[in-house]
Every structure is written in structure tokens, then in C-alpha cells.
Image 1 (cartoon, rainbow, N blue to C red):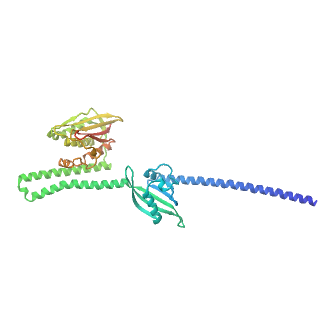
Image 2 (cartoon, rainbow, N blue to C red; image 1 turned 120 degrees about the vertical axis):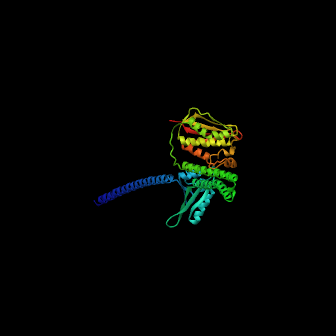
Image 3 (cartoon, one colour; image 1 turned 90 degrees about the horizontal axis):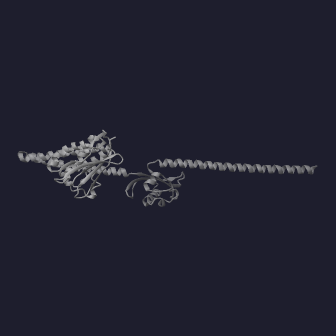
Length: 389
């Protein structure tokens, strides 16, 4: 009996052992599945965090570049790619492989030594040079182990352009004001010094003072006009406007000046109607005709024409037969205070702002303005306006 009991006990132990091994195997398998499941969830969470991080960085206006401890790119947002004109995913690339900028590489080396660099300005070469301000800092762990570098790039190109424009504007205004003021001051001092006792000399001096005072007045008016136009504060009274009567009205203001030089004014406009502010449109024609009469040849003609072009627009032209404009000046004639012939322009009372005002008025109507000219063959100024609705 005892041997039978012993065999039964051994059999039970074997069955228990097999059952226990199976249970352990099943638990290990369940644990392995659970670990894989947790790893999968962790990867999903990491991917979501990474996606949120990419969206956050890509929404920034500043360019952001993050490097790891080995100098390889970890993050490069959309603004950075646009600044440095890069394509494709830069992750994992060495810095100089991602962007060929030794100045940025030198800046990273400087950060590695100093810990951070603030407000560093650099030039970005290209078809149009850009100015960038870079703030950079080292990324470190709690135990001060270096983990990488972050660089933030601010585009200062527009700011620097505006600063340069402001400086040029102040310099030009100062120069334009100085000349007539100096003449007025000089003639007044001469009159007070005794020239007032000579009626003929006094009259001549007072006429000169009057001309320069008028020039100052015109300059101030043009400065106020272009300031309003550039600020966008001007409210246009847009309505259907027949162009031919506007030109006839402007012609009546120039008949005396044109007649003095035997210049013929020709209104070749057909029955065209534009969607525009009539007062501002009159200002455009006045400035263009002032230029045409001023620089046209004696005994010549000034012709205003127009036609309907595609996309529901009217194209208007003002043509003279003067000396024309040099090729290098065609792109600059609409700049403030730019003059092709500086001496002649000032002598004839120009402020240097007329064409700049024309450009801003036309652009505020949604149109464009340009000029075509060949030296010795006159100049033709064009501008477009929307057709009347």
C-alpha cells in the first residue's frame, strides 16, 4: 500500500509542478504582453508630445534651432527653415551639414564656452541680405551635464530697413528745408542791412523770399500728404469717376504754364470710368502733369491716354517728349526725394515727393504704377485703377 501511496504522491507533485510552471509561463507571457502594451502606449504618448512640440515651435515667428550634446539637430522649426532656406527634415544632421553657416557654428562654440549669448547680430547672405538677432543658451541637466544648445533667431531685416528709411527721410527733409530757409534768412538779413532802402533791389529780394516761402509751404503740404498715405489713415471716397472730365479740369490749371513754353496738352482719353476717389485722382494727374510740363521740351506736347485692360482694370498713361529718364533711374523715380536732375528740379520748385505721392495713392486704390522711358525719347508714366462697378 505504501508504494502505491508514494507513487500517487509523486504523481501529484509532478502534476502540481507542471501546473505551477504553466501558470508561471502564462503570467510571464501576460507580463510580456503588458510590457509591450505599456511600451506602445509610451511611444504613442511620446509621439503626441513630439507632435505638440513641433506644432508649438512651428507656430512661432522666430526661428528655433535645438542641438543635442553632439551638435546634431534635434529641432528646427518652420521659421528657421524659411530664414535659412533649408528643405527636408534636418533632425539628426550635424550643424554645418544642415546649414552652411560658419557664423552660427562659431556662435554655438561660443555658447559652449560662455553658457549663453544674447542679442548677437549677424548678416544672412543671399539675393536679399537679411539681418538676424540671435539669442543662444546651453541646455544642462540638474547635475550640470551639457545636454545641448538652443538658438532663437529674430528677423530684424524690416526693422533695420525702417531705421535706415527714417534716417534717410530725416536727412532729406533737413536738406530740403535748409536750402529755402537759408535763402530766406540771407535775403532778410540783406534787406535789414540796408537793401530795403533801394526799392528795385528790395522788390527783387522780396520776390525771392516769396518763392522760397511758397516752396516751403509746398514741401510741408507734400510731407503731410505722404505721411497720411503711408500711415493708412486716409479714408478714400471711392465712387465711379469719369476720367476725361478730371483730366480736363487738371489741364485748365496747367494751361498758363504749358502755354509759356508752347507745350500742347492733349486729352486722348476715351469714355473710361474708374472706381476711385475723385479728389485723390485729381492729385495723381496734377503731380504727373506737373512733371510732364516741367521736363517736357519747349514746343512739345503732353498726352494723357488710357484703355481697358484685363482683370477689370483701367490703364492710364501720361506721356511727354522731354529728355527721358536714364535706365538706372527708372526703378527709383518713385522714391521719396529722389531726383534724376537734382539741380534742375530744385530750380523749378519741385519737392521730390510728387511721384512718391502718386505711387501711394494708386496703391491705396489697389492699382500699380510704373514708368517707361528711353533717354532722348521722353517718358511715359502708367498707372492702373479698378473699373467702375
